[in-house]
Every structure is written in structure tokens, then in C-alpha cells.
Image (cartoon, rainbow, N blue to C red):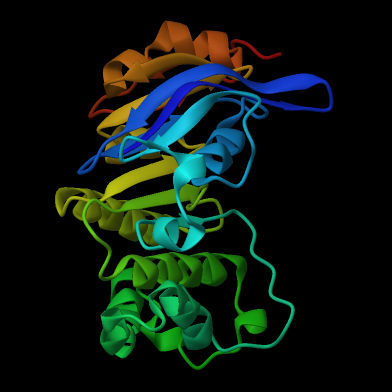
Length: 258
């Protein structure tokens, strides 16, 4: 559904991404992992059309991203960024309802109220609906933004895509699990999900495929076992990892470091 063809992104005279090619397919969760500064958020922003590429191209449904009208893109893919600032006071429910703006003056407007209600239930934020967004914790705001994206995709022409930049970073363990299970359900329903993650065990749990970025280059993109190979992880993070009983990866902090 969304593809990067030899994409390079430059800023300040250096390549933030270099010759990256991958595809996000409907019905899958693609986790993007890698050390700090590897280009994970840059890749997501390039795929979303928020960053211009210096070389290569991004495709959506086989068409170059530049050939899409913004309104048509907004009806097919939603983005959850790491930080969202609001310049005026709003209730959580009003923030979530912003996701329905792409459907203004269409037949889908009839679903606005139902879409917002369903999105709040899916993201587990119905109890926050009347709270002022500015008073919410970081984790609560993140869950509200997820609900806003879900409301946006309600009624989208299949296939739809959901792009999330470190969506679990501000969440406690219980809410992380809730969100990861939601992403798996959305993928089973046909949504193409890309999530930038720091926690490798979260990637192991949620992903159908994993893309590993190192220094702006795609070091691996494939099954979990391939992309989270301990040898590759040591190259990426500078310390050894081992599998633990019952599954999961454990870094050996005492054995290495940069």
C-alpha cells in the first residue's frame, strides 16, 4: 500500500536516510526499530509525506505520493506523531473529532458521532472525553491521539494505513499491552500498520515484519527472527542480546556499551 523506493532524506548536509526501500502491506504490522538517530522517525515522516525526499520516491497504492491530493491521502492514512501541541483549549472528545475533518461535506459525515464513539472505545479513552486535553498526562494524550487517528480512518476506502511514531513511549505496561493488541486487531481487519518502536520485545510481540535501521540505512527488513537476530542487534546497539526462556530478548548491559 505504501512503499519507499530508494528513498534518501537529507538535512544539514547529511543523509538522515540513505537509499531505503521497503513496503507496508495491508493486513500487517511493520515495526521499525533501531538505535537513537537511526532514522526511524524520519522514515515515518517521509512515508507520511511530511518530509521531502532528496532522492527516490514514496508510493501510495502504486502512485507517487506527490500525485495525491492531501485530502485524498487523509482519507486513506492517519499519522500519530510523538508530540502534538494544541494552541487552544479543547476537550479530549473534540481532539478526537478532529480526525473527522477529512470527511466534511461527504456522505461519511453521517458517521461522525459513531466514529468518534467507536474510536474512544477502541483506544480506551471514553472516560477522558470531557477532560481538558491540556490536563491529561502524556500517556493519556497519546491514547487520545490514537483515537483521533482511528476516527479519521473510519470509513476509509480499503486499504487504510495507520502510521505511529513511538506510540507506546508514554504508556504504562498495561496500556502498552492494550495498544499493541489493538494494532494486531486492526491489521487482522486489513489495516496496514507501521509503528516505530524502541522496545524490541514489543516489536517481537506485535510485528509481522520488522525493519531495522542503522545510521540511516536499512540493515534488515523481514521476519522477526531475521531482523532481531542477536548478531545484528549487537551491531546496532553495541551490546549483546540473548533470548530468554518463554521468548523475549534481554540486553546484557554489563557486557558491552558504546
